[in-house]
Length: 236
Length: 236
DNA sequence: GGGATGGTTCGGCCGATACCGAATCGATCA
DNA sequence: TGATCGATTCGGTATCGGCCGAACCATCCC
View 1 (cartoon, protein in one colour):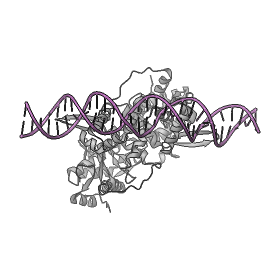
View 2 (cartoon, each protein chain N blue to C red):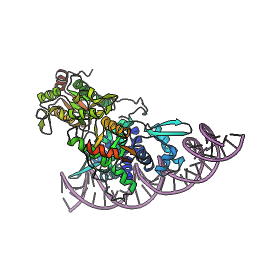
View 3 (tube, protein in one colour):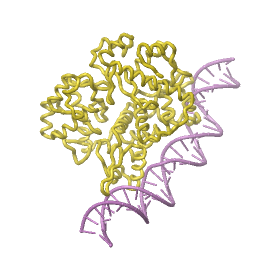
View 4 (spheres, rainbow over the protein chains, first blue to last red):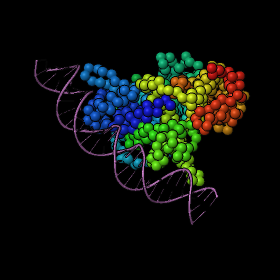
């Protein structure tokens, strides 16, 4: 087959608790140093170094030297998608719904966070709901579609994709979004190109900002207004 | 998080060579007995039994008792999609393109096979190419779309989805296909609802049939004609 | 019931690997 | 140039988990 050994190797890499922690930390698309990865994984730097080099040779993460630091990030969106998909399976009906104490930081994560390059959490799900509600977007389990009204809506906002405004494309000819199951909400939110573009735009316009360089994001007063008035969504 | 331990558990389950072999064997959507799984994995029945029970409690496979046999299948399409995605990462640029001797059975697999519930191999890729070529289908990395012409084409053939003919649906409102990277061709073929429907239809009409109860399928003379004349594709 | 077949449980062996301490390499800064 | 900090390499230990042999349970058939 497509080399079963390689398949097992990749899965096994994600199957170690320490490495899984590192990969999860990289899920937001940012690059982290080896020591940061060691810290999030709860292991010593030398152990982390070994893990990282294995993941790098397997093509899971890419390394970029910068002075005496080494920045690591997920090698490609495919890897992020793989991790998401494994999460979906792990969150499935078989998963033991452990009550699990929810700390304040976890609460922030549940409210809004980045998921590789797009938005997730209550914000992400509510955004998806609102866009679908108003007929700007349609989602199925297999893919998604921006409607003609959606094209106009995004164009009005000035959201660009691949350097082109949506307006310049044939409306029905492009699939730009992909549903992505949310682990905290267990509902779909918007990934794919449109998801990434919306997320980037929200950061750029100051609607949201990162909390302490984590995956969690806070909604700014401006964002609060925009999300309520323009997107007509209410978080609670 | 969405319980990191559960995530690692799932990945680790796929990360063992014997279990990976079993999962691969189940990828075509059929149900296999414990002994069959033991054989494909190259382990003794008692070892296989342990593997199976672990995968069952984790929600990767489901078990169905039938007399003194136990039939195992992938617990859900999500699991199949996870395996596919891991394959994609494993087939990535980092993968050692081992020349790997190709046996006759492997050759059949490369020509045409099922991939969970849809068609893959040269046939699957050629089919996707032809449908896109004639404007019946559009694919991107994030999803796919059946065009209006495609809707008419499938309706003419009589292919139904979810019990409804495609005709009865609004053309642009449904995304029914999902690209799925082919490990042998390294190109996309058609998964999702439309992929599953086409595959089932091809079996039903006798265009293709299974070879020795494996994933490999043979193209019948009828199928040969249909694929050439109706779908206008040439395999070689 | 007795035999055959599919499947599972138990116990012990053993190889793989995650982990850390200590030492080393490389780059930055005083 | 020495000091510092990030990162890696090496060696040794301990644990985890895959594997099989043997025994046991369940179902079907004669």
